[in-house]
Structure formats: structure tokens, C-alpha cells
Length: 427
Image (cartoon, one colour):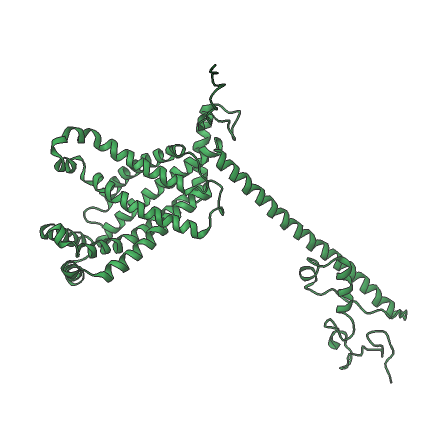
């Protein structure tokens, strides 16, 4: 039996950087890089990235107190599992953190009794209400990211409101889980991990920051990937995640310098210094995420994937069809107005003939009604519009002139003894 060699493997789809450019086809690579930066800046200005970052920061900050309160309420049921020493340590940390925001009187009269009650016997009402408020406001913040990313890609309206909110809710739950792992690692540093696994101290110190970096990039890439209504390769969203992470590190560094000189120590913010600092940090983080999304959108417009290019073409065709429908309606209204003016001129000629004594028995058409173009011209043929216009002004119809408009008598008889249809008045 003779074995024939395969004719060839199917060609792999080219990566993003090997595709033909949809934009800037005749521009050098260096020039394309500058144009990508310019497009990113234009997108940030057009879609109000700073304002949307402030909106997301507000909802995230609003979700933190009920979320923390719900977690505290859950800890009241874990006293046996965690141990009394751990619970007391957490309780003291909460009171200390509250003292940075509230006065001593507020801590002693509000926070301390509530925390003692929650830790002693648990509070299911606090857990349920706190988590509901936290999940709503937190998912609302994620919804800002999802909506903005979708609009930046030019695919707004492709995903419904319910699907968008469900997606935002799911992403927020995932963010809580990832944040519960990553944020403590970022704050504690490798020394805390070495305390858990002291026999691998060398490997932990070497791999600590690369692992944290990879987890952060993976989460941001996943956020960008699932926010776009159509599916594209996951790796193509990595550039935006890298830019967002770099901007977050730079923004956090600059924010720390700013807070050191404005918030720490004696400050005009007073007891609001800590919430203001948290709000600013969340705002910087949200701004970095949105800028990364703008970078991905700008790159996708130059080297689009098949899914996003097809979706944008479908949306462009739908927009053209909607625009053509609007133009057709406007043309119909203009034609109706022109036809109404012609009918009005004919009616004026009939009135002139009546004044000259040339009574042909036709009804007086008068001026066209004010609702003529909108209510009739859009769905009636011209002949039907004409007949309806005549019927509108027949004696006894709803368009009959009022006597005071012509200075006539109370029974509708115009001056001079001639009726509306041209007959002489009975004396």
C-alpha cells in the first residue's frame, strides 16, 4: 500500500500584527504608532473617560462600607472556626480604621456597639442587606466599564441591557474573589507569604512579583475580552492590559506624592482625608482601566479581527438603513407640505370664483389643516389625501369656518347674503 504525503496543513489565521491594516495602510510603522496614541487620546476625550472613571469610583466607594459590614457580619458566625484571638484582632483593626474617619465620640457611640453586637452573635440582616447593596453598587461600577468598552469598539446596542447587567454582576463577583487574593498580596508583600511557607523562602521572593503581575494582567485582559460583545482572540487584549497596569503603577506613585503633601498631617480635609484618598486612588485605577480599553479599541480599528470587523459592518449597514428611513420620512413630509400648499392655492382660486359669481357647486376647500403633513401625508396616497382634504372642509364637517373668522352671522351665513356653498340666503 502506497502512502501519499499530505498536500499541506491548513494555513493558520494570521496574528493581529500580520493582518492587512484597515486604517493607515500607506503609513510607516513609526507613524502608525503615533496615530494609535493620537486615536487613543481622541477616544478618551470623546467618551469622557475622566468623568466615567469618577462615576465608577463613586459606585465602588459606595459599595465598600456595606461590603465590609456584610463581611463583618459573616465573621460573627465564624468565631469557632477562626479562633477568638483572630476575631479580636480583626475587631480592633476595624475600630482603629474607623478612628481615622470618625471622631472618638462617633466610634464609641456608633461603631463599637455595632461591631460588638455583630461579632458576639452575628447579624443576618446586616449580612443580607449589606451584601445586596454592595453587589448592586459594585456591579453598577463594572457596568460603566462594560458599556464604555462596548462603545469604544463601535458596537453599542449589540448586547441588551439585561445581558449587560448580568455580565457586570458576574464580573464583579469574580473581581471580589480575585481582589481578595491579589490585593492582600500587594499590600503584605513577599514577607507575609514567606511566613506561611518558610521552607520555600527563596522561590517565593523570586516568583512573588511575577505571579502578582501575571494575575493582574490576566484579570484585566479577561475584563476587556468579555466586555466586547463579539468574541476575538484573548491574547489580542493583552496590550491594553499592559498599558492599564503601567498607568496604574505610575498614577499610584504620583497620587502618593500628592497625598503626602496635601492629605497627610494637618489638612483642610480633616476627618474626610481618608475617604478622599481612597476615592482618588479608585478614580486613578478606573482611569487606567478605561485608557487600556481605548488602546485596545484603537489597535482593533487598525488591525481588526474578523468578528469585530463583521460586527461593525453590520452596525454600519443598520445605521445606513435607519438613516435612509428617516430621509424617506422627511421627504414624504416635504412632499406633503408642497401638496398641501397646492391644495391651498386651488381653494383660494375657488373662493375667488365664488366672489366673482361663478358658482360651480364645488365645496370650499379653504386652508389645509395644521395636522395635514404629519397625520395624512405619511400613510395616504395623494388622491386619498386630496379627497379627505375636500371632505374636511365640506359644510357640517369638522373643518367648517367659524362665523367670527369671516365676520358672518351666528348661523354661519357670511356677509352679503351668500352661504358657504354659494347659495343665496332665504330672506
